[in-house]
Length: 382
Length: 211
Image 1 (cartoon, chains in turn orange, yellow):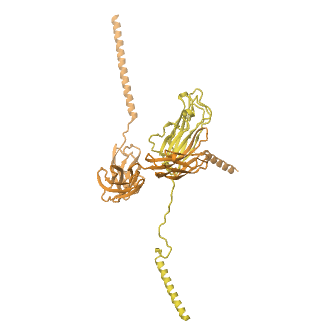
Image 2: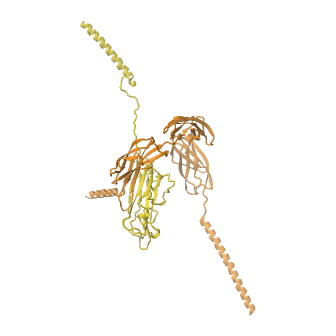
Image 3: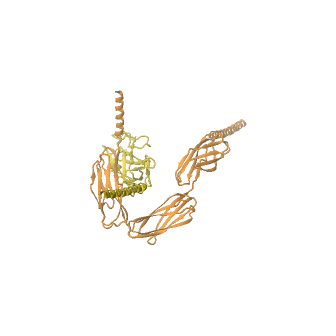
């Protein structure tokens, strides 16, 4: 019986916890549509609105092109549901570029006391209106590679203007000293209005050293109009560099010692760890290992006792082990300069006390002399 | 005559069986080339389309301090859901509430978040004593880095509620990644001793738009 009571109590407790939470959500799917402007375009866009509580939803269209939208309904019940937005565009729209038409569902407040929070969610119909004449944009991306592998550049040209365009130019490759070392021709012919064309370009890096590079896409269309996009890329070598290390330790205690490392390789490197040896002392410790992703930085951490080290600065050897290779570095490490504040305070207090005593003695001597002079005068008068 | 017919039929049967044998042998020998069999070597493709969804969840959607009044002798009381204050209610007899609004991005798309109120401080609380009423909010990350690209709006700072449409853009990029998809909105009220009396209420609207 007790067991049943206990069970009922636990059930009621958890039920109360669940009921006390006022979880409620509101959502829309899909989040957005994209459509290119066409004179007189007539198209239906469907949005499914979702919610899990008892609010009424008010449906409306917002944005400068909202007047061209007819909604299948302006309200939804507690179960929410689908809404069709019929878009009927005019023959022309003056302002070029992107126009957002928001189809929104707002929860209507229930007038509860205090401050209430309600949700409003908006689906988006993005209408792209072409620019007059020639107008284009560029998306440019590249990949990181390992030594000897080709670098692939991906370029997409979007013709957002009303005229057909052809795009020509080069991808310029710069090394980390900003020196131009190679250029790759790039051209796109006859891209019609509102169209996008993508192309891939390959850079042979067999003669390139590992390191950091930059690719600059510089293309022109319609005379002086230019497209420009710059992107960095790296060529990797199977190596790990030591970026930084702890260099401000404390004497006579166990210290944390960090070694910040960076992978110079595009692929993952597993089981990377450091072995640190304090030169001149029988102190050697290893850090736990980490796995590095391509070109990732990480910190290896170990601990050691500095009690036996007498000097204020000493040397250490840091060795990083990975993939049957090692990177080593000899480094100088310093101890923090420590002050004995108790001793400083004591000396200062003694000095102040001495000054006070000297001043007091000087004062007493002066007073005594004064009294002596007065007594002498009195005795002479008598 | 009958014997000749039987012989011809036997020869025909022999020829047919020979052809059949050859065909079977060829078929077995070239099984993978699927000329005479149903062996399939083409790679199957599975297509799936995942629709984008914008959805926000409210763990708490009402803050109610209950009934109360400004303490006798005090000109203004402060009610706050934020923890930095020593007590949630100063100079007042309302209930202590320390739970702000919790919003979570539970969709599969980053969200632009705007906040607007139905009333400003004068319309909601009224009064002039103690410097007049205040009605403020403070947005913070419940999970680190949930709200990104806040170039104009500062997290952790008190702002007056904005009752002018479309409100204030509090989070330009509210992440949907489960480790960084939750923010908290705290509310602070300054209630003067000569405020409006009765049941005071206001509704704040959080508007989410997919990016």
